[in-house]
Image (cartoon, rainbow over all chains, first blue to last red; front, side, top):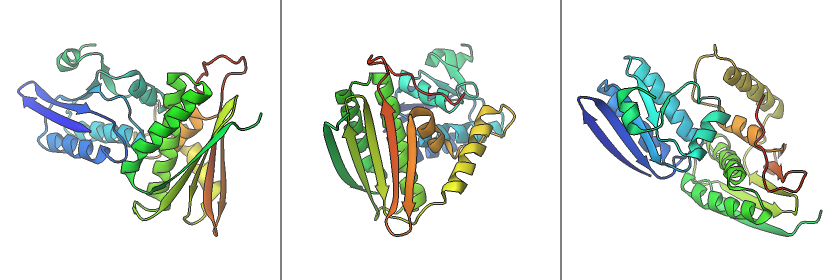
Length: 111
Length: 160
């Protein structure tokens, strides 16, 4: 898994590439925690290049939402593949996250 | 129906091995005839089973081992995940699953990150069985059937 992080006055975007699983999710967790510590808002996780995510990845996103919730940081995820969306649906979390079709929509905060 | 093929792989309890397991399971699912959506779901269930072994049975240690046995049939796939840790309390496990399922289905329950893996396993697979003993560890058996009509599409079982 590879991460790239962009922060500007519009907020922060973590772009994820590769599988998010038990092996790789700690790295994503740290990246989210670093931005949350700086109270970056909105905090967007762009999953365009993620074909596979397991419950460790889902748990990482839940933790991100809880961390940003402490400062009203508005945690958003965008560009979900069919596989990632299905995992969120199975975990019944698709209705909990703020999910956007594109990164632009996520940055604007409009679906 | 008789078994056509079986594949056995033994891996260390190392999270970086999960990618190899996923690739192997996905290939096996395709050989049986599952479509890509169900193949992804079965792969996820096996991944979650292995992840639970690594985290809960071996406590994150890389020194344990996991035996993955994949049996291919004309109408189904059966996957056995074996660990060599202590036996598990099946009644307690069942209580945890039911509690977590209620939480997930309730919009009022507090959001928490843990305990999703076993819910995903039960949501995806048609049969989930544990055999556990203090002497020989635990075997998790996962079964997924092709559709009864013989079509290559299988609905993913939902919790409601």
